[in-house]
Image (cartoon, rainbow, N blue to C red; front, side):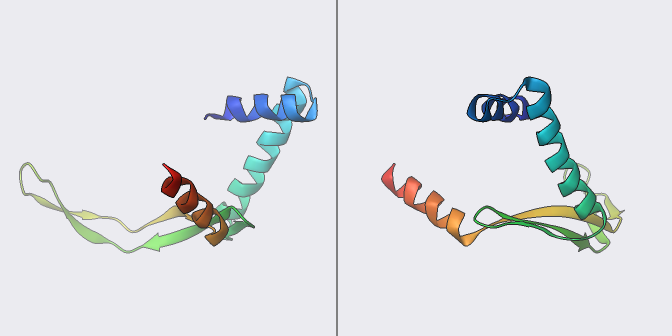
Length: 96
């Protein structure tokens, strides 16, 4: 599923125009991005949480040449699914 699929689904479900549905999806995504950029976690109950995690500098190695190099410190966004959603996924995979 891509963003266009989400927009189309909202159009059909809520009866909105493509422009209205697209604006709503963009607004939600911009809110999530702005909060993460400010270093704040984003929690959607029953779905999961996005957090900004800081990684320390470390030594990496080119597997081909075995040459070592420093990987700079950085911030990454990590998603943690909620326990409710994990249980649903586990239940669905058990049926398969």
